[in-house]
Amino acid sequence: MQKMADKDIKGLIIITTLIFLIAPAFIVVYIFIYNQRKKRHLEEKELLKSTFQKELLKTQIEVQEQTLNNISREIHDNITQVLSFVKLNLGMIDEADAGTRDKIAESRELVAQTINDLRNMSKSMSFEHIARIGLVKTLEIEVSRINNSGLITAGLLITGEPFTLGGERELVLFRIFQEAFNNTLKHSGANHLKINLQYSEQLFNLTLEDDGGGFSPEHLDMAGGSGLKNMESRAALIGAKTVISSSQGKGCCIRVTLNPFGQQLYIDGIPADRYS
Amino acid sequence: MLNYLKPEIIIEVICFIIASLCLLKANPRIWQYQIAYLCVVCTVELTGVYLKRHHQGNQWIYNILLLFEILFICLMFRYLFSRYIRGRAIIICGLTILIILYIYELSVHGFLIYNNITYTIMSVVYILYALFYYYLLLKDESYIDLKFSCEFWWVTGILFFYFGSTAANLFHGRLSGIKITSKHFLPYYIFIVLNYLIYGCWSYSFICKKWLTKTSRA
Image (cartoon, rainbow over all chains, first blue to last red; front, side, top):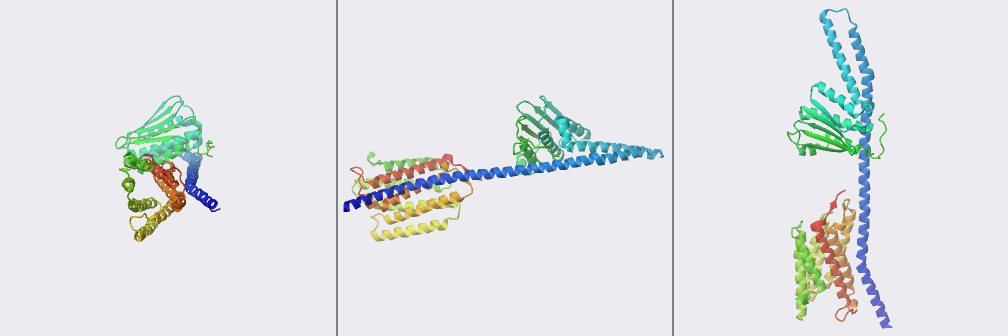
């Protein structure tokens, strides 16, 4: 009887020891499973955060486009009309001496020039106009306007057979061009600006190259919140990549690369409707 | 010399070699102390075998090892906790209990008999530390790939070894009655398995420390 009890206790002790040996394995497995869940949770959180940021950016751009469109209409339908009327009135003044007539002619010319400038500005603001005439034509007009202004010499080079990239994508590319051009005018002190549009089946490239003062790569990192980042964000919105390269005294080159047949347009993958 | 190469010593020596290769320039410095600690372990084990073969008592030398074990592992846990919390108080508390117990046991039965109670309490303290480390790891917001985390595998080795050895120590009297082979009893084989687990985990941890550690912050 005593022997049986001893045997039972021995068995119990062996089982307990085995449990003590195996228990850590269960703990470790649990830790691994929990850690995997934590990873998934963090990934989901990151995704939500990035979705939110992209949605926010998309909304900002939509609001901006809407505002620009409204201003464009206002300029076209109201201000230029009033100025045309002023020009007409000036033309109808007959009773005047030679000096006054010269002044009136000069004023008419100035008003005509203002009307012209306002119309061009209105066009470059209008989404509908850009969508209608396309990126190439818009850039050609813009380059001619830049050259006429005498601020800087711009050249447009198109390689490959141009095709449409879609209204929204062309609008975003044009806004990137405008941002880059503004930066060149304000900061670079460049004399020349080269714009290159490269069309091929695999990719589309928009390259803007100036011969200005440039900036060091550290400045590029520090200027994270400025126009450069804006360009990158806009490009990312249409699935394009932006590479900005520059060094002190060697100008700046901005290259936006896009897969022309990629469907990515905004985070939900659905091309956005018109901004109106 | 070959007579000294018992299975439990072989894995310790291998672990020491891996530590020497991987941790010589490791940062922070606590990882370099690991090499010294493993050197002490190997020396004590080989001396223990030598004394046994010459029919002399070897428990006193394991008492010396116990002191190193208390100090080094507490120090390592302090480093591991410091990544998440200010764990100084927890470590000092455990360390004080163990040192007092160590001195008390020595005063009771002298230096030549092994401090068994200190060892058992130390095992419990280290299990609690290991579980607390896991808690901190899971609570932390950053994600660590555990497959390649040197700290995680180091703690896992500790958990396996001290969890298993607590049971083996508590039931030592009964388990010693179970003869597995003509020479050895069950506890001997349990401790071989535990040795392979801890030094296996530690060796992998050192390899991770040298080549694989990857941490990503959310």
